[in-house]
Length: 147
Image 1: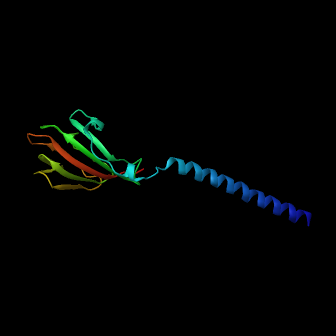
Image 2: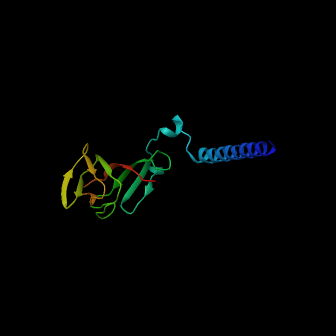
Image 3: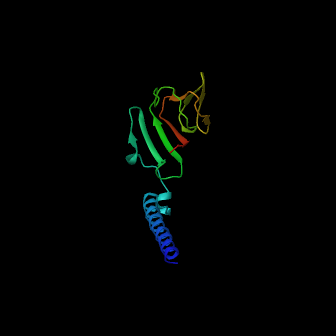
């Protein structure tokens, strides 16, 4: 009988210890997850908060540290320039032209397009975008980032 009581007390102690550890993990996780409010879920573009790049600016409306996996960035590229050479990566991307004239490169072919045009780039396909117009190119990039 004493042995059964000792085993029961030991098991209850282990359960209590696991419950405390689970609460600590939950507290740690909760403190690293963003708190979503109307104030931080609405983001209005402001050029003075944009990051200057070698070819223009970029502005993150949402990044993977805030969202559940998706990012939304606006790029502004000066005439005759591109953000980088054609490349590929595992994440798919979706581009949407707001202003200017873009030349899309996808898998060895190009197309030129203006505002209200979208461009989808599947995973691992070589792609690029450049400004072939006489004014700034402004476009959105939507991407599902792998964490």
